[in-house]
Image (cartoon, rainbow, N blue to C red):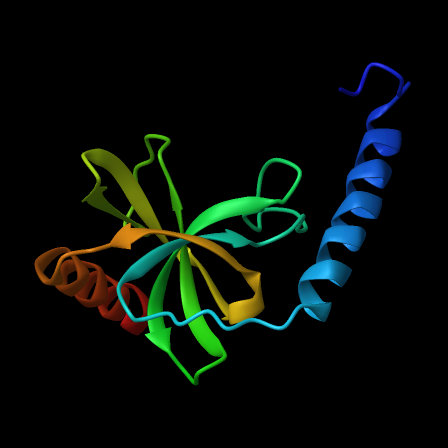
Length: 140
């Protein structure tokens, strides 16, 4: 995909330009999506800076847990990964028979227009574990 570029700056510039287009389309769309706490969605999180987690593919998608619904349009989201990670900021969950890690340190407030497709819902027991670990992580 990037063979035509001579250096990483050209690749990053192209990705930023593409993300800008995706973000403008996302911002302009009217969303009738209904979401609930505990659901996991593919979400357009974008191309971010430094250690911030970013989305992948042409839509810059990443699985995100709806941790707290703040309004009908806004929620607190926690990004997920399938890569093995260690640390107090990761919580192991299982969704659709696949191990996923909730990344407590990648918490973001997100608009529902970023939501792309619902993947599933954590069961109440798993969500309670994530919630307890979230509170412990941010209260210490």
